[in-house]
Picture (cartoon, protein in one colour):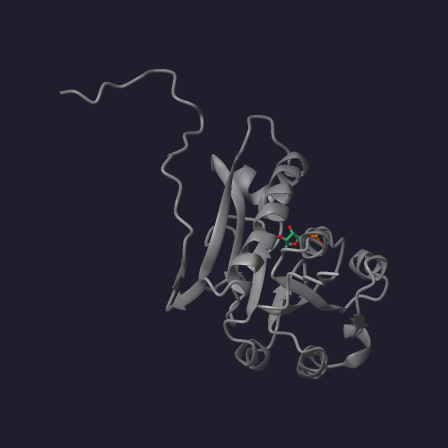
Length: 233
Ligand code: GRF
């Protein structure tokens, strides 16, 4: 028997996922990690909400789970200390926030500096916080999207690793736009985890570089122009 495995030469990065709700981004990470050539594995799914759908998804995938009920534990500091202990005990090298609806203390953020990432459903720095799709539509922007970024102490702030731009369509509601943006999240989050696990992502101040990943050459219009403009003068 050959006994050849994909992770003998380079062990897969140990990833923990923090989620409070539906867990569709967690599911995208679970599905990515199920592929033999994916360079990361999920060692813990931690939630602050007992009964969260994310926990059911983790259990179905046979992953270790932990619940720290924020209503029971009292202070924010106590919650973050307990979470940090669980993450360290699980050996997490990278922590992914995936719909984790809690503000983390500066101490927690510092403990995982440049090892803690978040996905947010807007093109940051536009529309930090909640209700991003309603606000994007109301503001009239032509592109919405999502952002994966390193976490800093301020909410939805931190060096941007990757973004996906999604056109806003005439007649979009928050729900139709959310559907389009969410499906882009499911592509980009596993991709970023792959890049990090492959050691290709570097942070310098506010800017992030990714070895071997280039910006697209195309520019995108919304609406699509109906006239062609000659470059000649
Ligand atoms: C996603 O839109 C994510 O960008 C935001 O919270 C939502 C979580 O959705 N931070 P899910 O729980 O992953 O389905």
